[in-house]
Length: 186
Image (cartoon, rainbow, N blue to C red):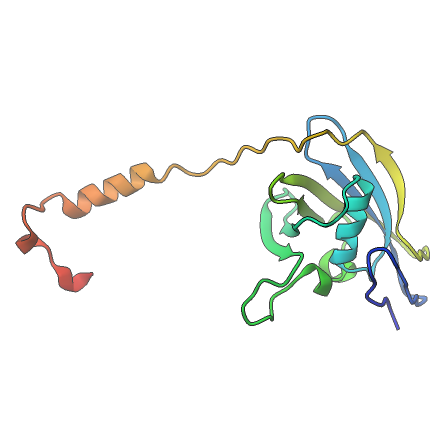
């Protein structure tokens, strides 16, 4: 036995005595503190957590979203999308990732991005595990109000144009005519 998959509005958990409760802190990436703490069953899927987070922050849950694995310094890693996007259908998705497998240890972290047009970004951390039985997700802490618009994100990429220019200069430095170019190596 364990947790059955469930619709976001209808939640049915079949509990076993070994199920654990997870206390998950979710922080919106803004200057002001906007925090929600949720109690969830460890056997819930990330899809369930997606709907729980969306609801806790006043969203309808209908926008595209992804979780990203992170290290302890919040460096973004592997994407876990809402839907399986692989061509062969064997990729991961939120529905196939269970909380206790994705966040097995206290202080494990994820980044959650909701609505890729707005880029609402959240930091998700497992802050406590207990043997308390929980049948449905509960919000136990709500701090701050979500802003009208998502905070602007500043994406910084390495300036590779200088490297490319240098490479092109090196490659064609002695180039004077097409007869000098070795086409067989390209």
